[in-house]
Length: 330
Image 1 (cartoon, rainbow, N blue to C red):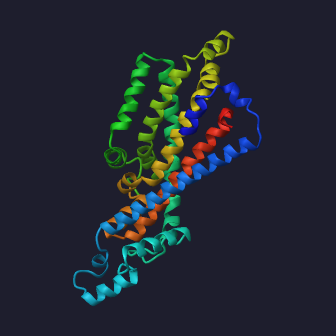
Image 2: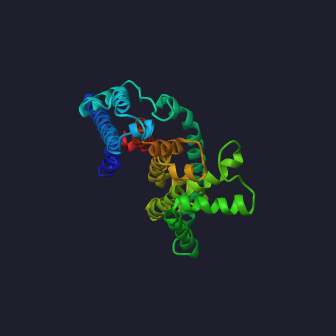
Image 3: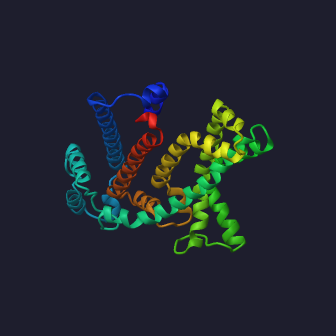
């Protein structure tokens, strides 16, 4: 992140002892406005791409009326949907709807898109939350274990497991878990939702990629921190191994790990399509697939806009957490 690189280039003493005054507040205000402007531009680009792809995906009128509909019916429906307007007019109406939180109505379900997204969101949040919890609880200790035993077979095993986690396709892993634990062993449900047992296989499948990413990043950052002089000083003071590793080592290595955890949460929240499809999980990913198959471009646009907003907000949260955790950035 730009804020981190700027902080690392300035000595810590000058950062912590800098006097506060009108110039300091002016710099902070400019920084906040710059971040908000970058977020607004990012959102505008994302919603523009969603609008363009929705129009390039084909005419939805044929899907709604069927091949036997007459030209008059097609023209009437096209006018009702606003598709007979010039493209710039459609785009401006689209932006106006986003600013007023009016995401339009679904062409397939005949319901407001905002209502449908809010109805499906709890299922996706439940899946992403469980998946990220597993990824953190497994990935962080795995990375720390590899860093503290660098060069041993523990390190090689952890690195190999992380590499496999980033290489295995999510949809293939999901189908294999269904075949093993649902079909052959009969221990867990194969899909749908309803009970904690239904959440186990989708959450494990969802956790694989972020777990591998977290483990590799934790291992890399911990390896660098454990070579720092203050770690040798902590050992020389007679602190226990766990105190040196976790209190002094991981605390100083947690910033990149925290960043990737937040960003991976946003990625999973807006891209859990494959997992929800394999397990028939009734979340936003399943809804997006149904909208794409029907060429329901208002619903696709609404989901893309929601995902873009979530990702931009999470990026701002990452910057805020950097400032809270690292006093030099203040």
